Image (cartoon, rainbow, N blue to C red; front, side):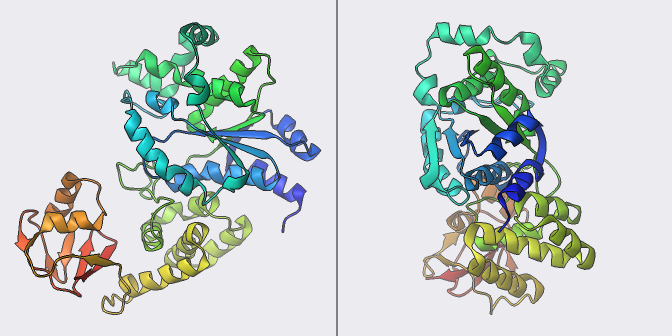
Length: 394
């Protein structure tokens, strides 16, 4: 196990893009003082991808050193929607959607943080109580010019795209979170830099010592573009082991090193040495194993590796242990309904696109008509997309 000095050195270096008041933070960590370390996360979707987990793992490093983690669930800021990395106006989320997303958030985060030692707060506790006068007081700290210096706002302005006043209030609210919980440190990705620094200004305005800020890098998607659920280039914390393994194996070769560094706990010297010795395929297999191991344990990682080898290297469908898909094998069923039962897709329109693209197959037969009906036999293999396989069960 690494010494405390080694843990601190790793915390300040690995996956860190910038630290505001680095010397101050380093001294505080070495002093033995128990810090209040804050991270805010908005429940804007049901699943958390491993790109967002980068900063959560950094938070775990603080926790392992004995500091108090303050996880702020942005149930109020989610109503606004963080515009930090958006090139179009973000729609307001409905409260019912936020509540639905919240049901899955803490179990996913609990795969990374020790939730028994985590202080979980909802920013509706304090933001919902602010008066209009309070908001005006906060707004006075910033200028429109400062807001418009943000790259995404500049680009939207140049392209005559809408920027709402609602969006301009987001950094003010996130900054006020730091006042409410008396944060010593706040974490966030590079897209959060403006919001994190806003917290320092607002704390100073209220007579608090400005928080130190630790900014982590942003992980790109498996195809090299920005990681986005919409584009399907994400690996989710809640994905099944086989799903995580398969998605990692689909990673572009030039991204292997970045993923080893950002989404695993493998020592940097070890993975760099391995990359010089192994083929991209073998390196990705090790990477996929480490990703699954982090979220599901070593036994699940070994099983997922074996399944992948059986399905994709040996192409032995009969020997593969596939998840069962229960279907009434005595009656006709529409192809569209079969795909929806797998829960691989989130909407019927997405299912229709997959089917029309020839990405759905029963046995050796490609099914391209969403409305077609067929009787499907027990034991047959169903393939949906590139990596999803099922065994039909009655």
